[in-house]
Length: 68
Image (tube, rainbow, N blue to C red; front, side):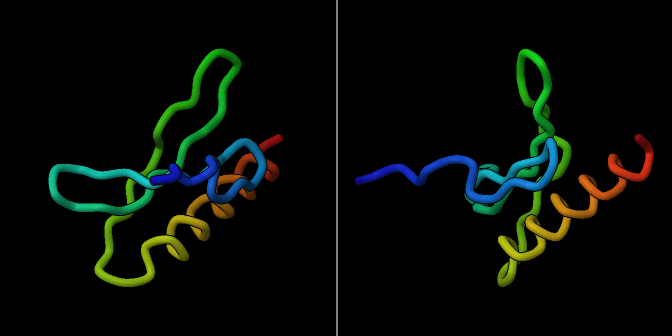
């Protein structure tokens, strides 16, 4: 089985990766740092989780751009 290429989506310093929390699958949004990335959101929805994770990634990136 081939692992998905990471990240699945990027926007600014944020990126999306698949994640499993217990038996629930979804997506996590991470913020890239100098030495490591930090998870800042986990999205687990019955449908549309990837789209919601991309929206959250874009939202956080736009907030960073405004604050800079």
